[in-house]
Length: 389
Length: 188
Image (cartoon, rainbow over all chains, first blue to last red; front, side):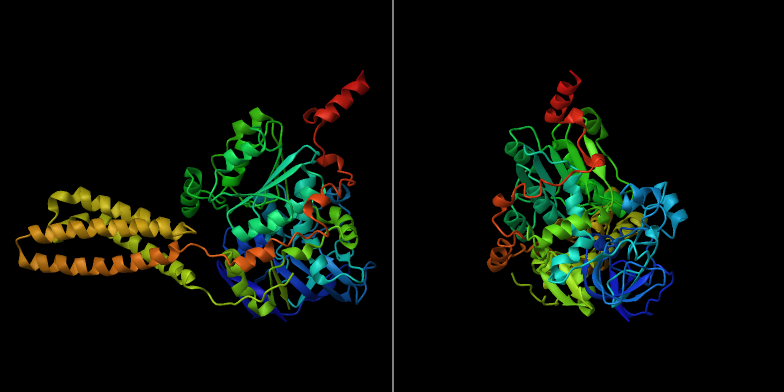
């Protein structure tokens, strides 16, 4: 079969690879009908996430049709149409029973490696470094889904791929980022980053009843899309973010701050961003935490910082005194996708939201390597790429 | 709402970014040569008494090179290189004017020609990468309609407030005025 394969930093290729096979009785093989490039795939592409090996198949946002099931899999049957969450979950361990699916204790095949990196291992993820199990991803014609009797979400008739594909990652990710802020009707929610996850944060904050939703970015078309979803836009290339946020909140700062950017923050020439660039260049820091610092500074005392943006390792010069003295709550983590999928699928069916609004480019899988660069460089108005194998 | 097939051509700005990476490597190489071979370089250019200047220029080149290799936006670093090139050319011209040896003058003029060529490359790359990102009005107009909602966004506010927030994600009562008051009134 053909798939998008990671070779080196900035080197993703459309290669021929062996077809996947059933390896465990609970597995299923899915024929991928749609897949997408996620912002966190860019961290792999750009070489910021450790644990990648040449030959790894990328992709953790995908859906398709079941073409083969293992003998113990009683949930799926051939012909079912499913969206597959990016987290691989067993459904049985202590964490899964608590709903903490992204830290499933069982599905990460490289637990010792992850224990060394993170102290304790997290769940297996599709197409996302050997620290999370080294599972082949879904930017491919076919994919093996382990524990397929737990994670995959069956899709009812009448919904297009484009409407439901993002149930596997970015919609629940934006949703959880806002849910874990426990938004009150008087709250201002400020969201850093108007990429795909930021866009879903905006819609989720509006749907969950925030009084005011603000988004911060410097890409005009992304800000335009966020405004369409009900946000007030701040272009950090043209305005002072802290001043504007304070103006919009009577000088008190937003109660809820969301980092939908993560480890590769870009900022105009602030002292801390230049410092991060220099340290990252000489490998003394893995991530660039400009957004975290700004959130800690501007957040209203006793407020909440929610961090769906991906960080991989070490960050420097964190003003933790601000966090402690202002009594801020920090909530973060990979998304517990299966906690939210039933509810969000219902909301899509009800017509409350159509997630396909975010798709700006639809291409064949063979165009994937080029689209990684287009998406990374934000060229051609690119916000979300969907690929059809 | 219409999805567009992307034209997959890399633009000129992308190529300029590649050139800037090359210039970054060249900058580091020149800088190291000036730092590690200060004595020889100073002697060849007739700047024996100005070794500190040569070292300073070398350090500038290395910093510039690291900046070019690590920055997503190379434009400021390229403009810094152009300014540095100007400084180099002025210094070389002054040495060429003041030297008494015709052999050394010939060597300095050759170096000036080389620096001038690199300056042209720096200037070209700096201009290309500094080009302001253009966004088509039609694109903005399209994205301004992409709410994802069936009704205007202000009418969708709170449509999902029926969601039961899981206990582990609720704001602690002490941080929420309403919940805090409710709890206290229950206690009393």
